[in-house]
Image 1: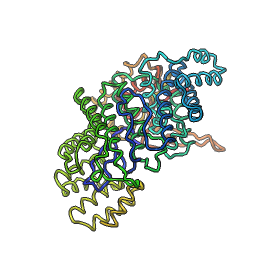
Image 2 (image 1 turned 180 degrees about the horizontal axis):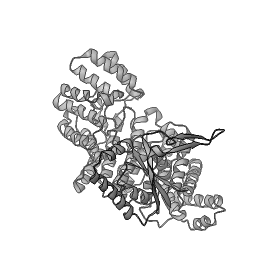
Image 3 (image 1 turned 90 degrees about the horizontal axis):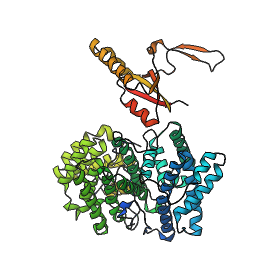
Image 4 (image 1 turned 135 degrees about the vertical axis):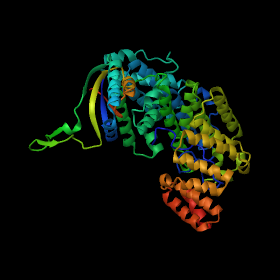
Length: 454
Length: 112
């Protein structure tokens, strides 16, 4: 995984609607269909009971996840401030979270979940830290509501996303400490064995302590670089959640929820950073189209073929407005704002045919200038096709062969262009190569179908 | 906390250094000297190592000590010196390292 946050591409336009290119980042497709009721005005960083399609069990899971997420990070921040020991504080939070995940489904969510979590953490702390009289005295002071400064959680995020930690460790630590996920939930979300995640977290916490990674907001001169690390973590979470989940995995922890919640929290805590608003808008614009991304049989639907009446117009308008406000107020375009602007162009088009490709191409020109990655250039080529034709796009793609020969979507895109130019045999070869390189089942199904008919 | 900043030279850097004229070389050394002066209040100890061709390695994990010519890992990147700094946390150590004007890699490690 890259910490640059810019290797992937947030909102590739559907390339004439035959490649599932309205996916952020990698060439993997998939999303659960139809969950329109997320917290749309969550700029307060809050989280509400969510109106999901996953049945009552999934719904209460979501409620539970939301409550834990909202409160665990506050508890973690309070404990770290109090104890000055990141690792010990994290252990106590994790313990309280696991107790909550065990007991709340049976006993119901307590009326004051925060006070409940604080009590469990304090008791547990007094128990395990028995020999540390220093900690005991401090723990006795732990009370909810805590008069903690509002930026405590921001300090927490900066510690978890410190570039001195490996990217996987940053992600695992952020999910555990800031979002209140259990190790088991993280393992399930990333489809890795639980001991692997546990080991990552243990190592990361050790490094935080032993290498002296600070618990504070970076200085002004460090801030831009450090914020990039944080946004990269949120972006990767979003990608992972958006792409790896399928309708069959609807019960799995929704990392997109966590990514949106984190982005909303960051937007609230760092209002002077337009890239934060850009990332939040990007996530919301993608989610607003979520309901149309799969058909009733769970198959991936291409951007060109999506039923746009199922898009959440209100969410699209609000996300676009958020982006416009940030862009106008700061006039500092960055990769996330540009990707969100591209996503907004797609989301605001009444039909695929009415897409403003000229505007999208201009935005891609700016984006490739800032992030000249091969994947970004590939997506720009797709936009180019709609403005200057297949021949020009194919020529651009050809220049990327060296970098993208192992990338399924590159072959699939070439196949489309070749087919449009009447070069059917070459197109077929490209599709076969794309199929061999694609691991995502939804994309495999799509390519197989195309090979059958194309 | 105490950290050691280990300065790591690359082959390319060595070549650049060799290609420098007398004036350029003097300027490069001056920049390093200035860096040490600037951070003098944080630097508790520092040393520059003689070139890697002077290194000798002894392995003690066999029946007899084995002495060989060269550094313990043959590589394109070699440690050429170090500075020990006393600062509040990693970010402060990183801040000092960021302005290092010479070789292109710095490894930062806390003293245990």
